[in-house]
Image (cartoon, rainbow, N blue to C red):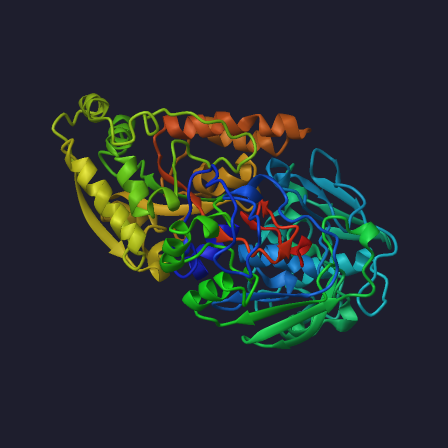
Length: 589
């Protein structure tokens, strides 16, 4: 499951459809901002992608966020929305986290509650963490390893906490396969694969080697929860803080307010700050209103972090001063088409290669919002993934309007010199996806490939349509629109669910291409037995290149998000892993 896919299935219709962005560079110049209170010298377009804008240690003031909906939960153990994984760090401290810095270092995994990254033994099957001494909950209670174990245990009860990733249930040994969580047991510490030898040590026993486990414990599911304060489904109304802020109030689905946590110790939590005197989150505000409130300085942040809508985008792009207070980062999400390896004649790699060459990438980019919707993609993983290297196997960059000659040559090699017929699957309630499918249909027609259009709504696309191999085969869905974003920024986090042969399942399938390449499978497995990050990340380009050689992913765009940077904020920059501004370091003038 991907953090962006999770956002996608629940909210991309309302959020990622708003993704609008542009390639890098600067609009130059400063001048007064067209809104947000103005500043004599705005930092410039994309300034916060690579550096900290308005660095300051000033304390005080209020930062107000708006959101068009509500988080899946403010309970850190029950959330999977990308923006909320970012925001919960204001009040919760998991074992590890992502480094707070602009640029590539934002992908680095670093200790948070733990004293260091985990120590792996037993061939990456045993992971040991030591938690920092003196960390306290907001009520003064000292955090112990038992509080972390309990936090993990409670996520096993999907009847009470249905959201969030399921890595612990999948990876842990012992009784993890049958454990139902502490809410259904008198033994609140009954998960045998997690042990606490002393109050500052926690040990995880895995059933398989997993070198990426430091990424798993970065999810806020490892943020400690005191068993005596846990109220189950109602815990979200006032989660017990270990971070710089604590809950003052929460009107469910309307507003919540955070204030400084006096028990927080900055020396034990260097990736976050406690600058603002109050943080307010307004929920259920219409998306167009959020954009205008942001541009006029009534709020400082759109919490969803997915970019402004079309009206505000036009407003920003037509104003030199507004652009100077905006950023346009690649946000880690990617739009592409799966080319199915079981639907004839796309079961022939040369027929799939013909589709790769024939696609008009300029028109696909236009469908997703033009250069302000994403950058033309040529690889199967985006530049946000560690180990990414650019290459252009099918001339997407050198011939973005399509290479008809190369496509026709591949058609001859696959025994279909005059083209063939297949169908393109897409989501009918995603306007950009509709436009993209039509653009691809037209490009394929130029080389004799007749592609019918078959649609489903987003609500059933993965459960009943593209995610069901038997349905895909029986309805000749050879080309299927999709999108993805990794739960963590390495090649395993990106490719395992969409390209590993063992990920193919009868329903809810995410390996929609049904790729089962022994090389890809072998390299993904080898990543989890590697003993150093260098060895692990060396597989990234190998896997990416092989997936593209297999022609099972037709890249469209590396998604980008046009974000407006409120001039009243300090310490503002894009955190690479989250693909949005780094919420827990912000202050205000």
